[in-house]
Image (cartoon, rainbow, N blue to C red; front, side, top):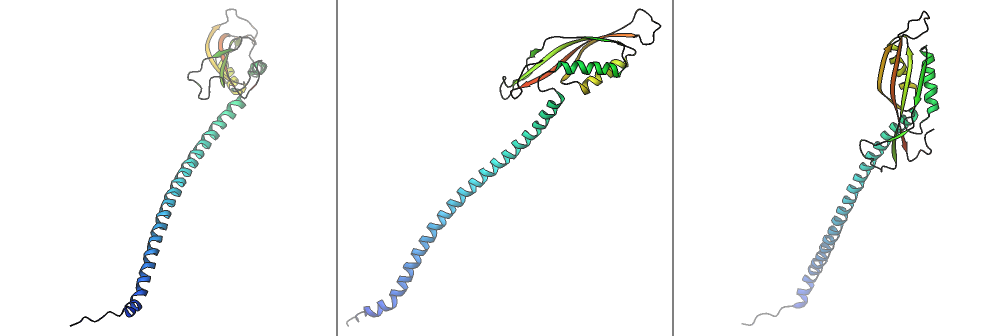
Length: 207
């Protein structure tokens, strides 16, 4: 018994369209997979860039806060006269004003030449950018009461430029008695230190 011959025209007519559809589907699937892989790679790259930018932004914000905080401190110290050239004329005028304001009998003083001071820790931006200086001052004044000495130093701290440190003080009674109520009852001999800071943006030497 002979097998019947296939009718290829019939077969092609009914299988060509499904085959073409399958081929198109495979091509479309491959193209979609390729595009998806590229999109995932691009997303990972953009996500990494975004994280880096965010970290840089957070670091910049933190640095800005630090700069603002230390700038305010710098401005405060500058206005107080701690940063900048030492003005001995202002110091002398402040001491005279304090003496007159407290009605102290008399005062003598001697200011030694300004010297450099080694910083307790090295500067983060270089030792040549920040220089600490100190001037030693010897003061002798007449007092009516011991409290006058504290009042005198309190006025210096508030009004005189720079930063002062009381190194030592000796108070002695006046040996000679006087009937004049304006004469001092005590003599105070004190050693002071006037500190100032010179930065690279401040020009000139001490006066």
